[in-house]
Length: 410
Ligand code: ADP
Ligand code: ASP
Ligand code: MG
Image 1 (spheres, helix red, strand yellow):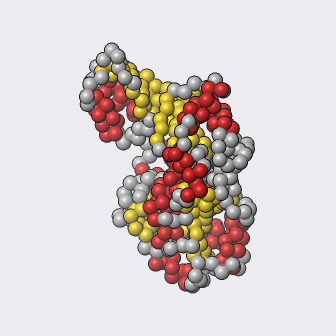
Image 2 (spheres, helix red, strand yellow):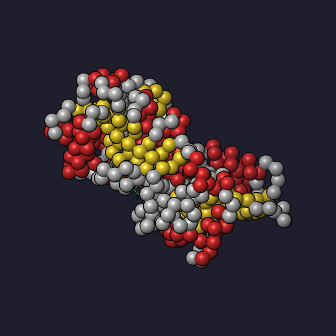
Image 3 (spheres, rainbow, N blue to C red):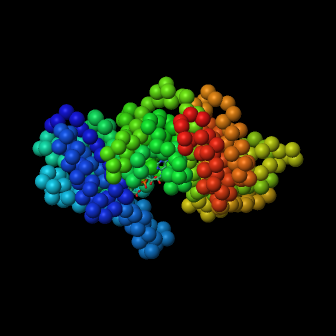
């Protein structure tokens, strides 16, 4: 085996068609020829995963999760076999594996399984034989030998986890942009590539809507100190390095702006202001496995107050049902909801030591006449809920206000 193992993940757009698969094969072979051992993790071709989920939903509104995983995991099996063939064609030896074949053992939570163990012996054996190893991303197997998947964007997690067990020299996430940007380049034309960002900030950005990496993969990388390099599959340039916080990062007040449009707001009106009421409401919601995000409750001057919170749009119907039941039980004034919301957020570790950041964000929105419906803050992030149709304008306004498109530091 060579000294350095490099794990390279290629996302769906990077392997969307045969020409792109051939392009990836060339990059992989080049990395191998430079004297590295290469382990490649691939996503399914283009939008395959969405298409497979679409097929399932044509058969039933409520696909059993085990069968859904059985179905969607096939996407990555196609891309890893094709990539292995393309590499053979270039005269190098490669071998493709499913998650199960390389011993990615998970718990039983179909569609969002957690990795509990990886037995990488098979990979190491193949690397010793000088082969390039290709692993189907996003999938594992539980102790009953049922196929599981690791949540959307899960190929990122496969790559980070393999990088950790193989003690890889680097973990590259090859995608369709040059790295992590100060905002989604599809929304903000002058968004800038970030050279270096901390795990914490990247985790927040990803959780708040920057789709480029799966939040769980960053959590995992942070826990085990796996450095990540996000870069383009279509160029040789250095992208973004995600690593532990370094001193200089603190000088940057706002690192990036993120947008989510897939949440909905629910309000329980005239909630009696008594100890235990919030506990009761959110316990009932949690029992339904619904993840509540922002919660807002004002002081009550009349003994009752409105309680608003946001939930994933997919869970809205379930939430309304529970909220109506609770509202009746606690004698509140009923339930209203709003699907037309967007959440715009700023993230930066420099916020810990700078004041006036929130005011500046609110000013950016005010200058565009955008009304803020909810606000939440934590140590390194501020989020505002606005009307859905203002979401992208809000991102652009905030990005400009903090001067993120030009020089760094704001
Ligand atoms: P892959 O198929 O390689 O996993 P994704 O489509 O999941 O790639 O993620 C890459 C996309 O994420 C980019 O095309 C970009 O539009 C979007 N994106 C959103 N926010 C950001 C950001 N802050 N920086 C970079 N890309 C972002
Ligand atoms: N193909 C899966 C998805 O679309 C996993 C991935 O691409 O990371 O979510
Ligand atoms: Mg992705």
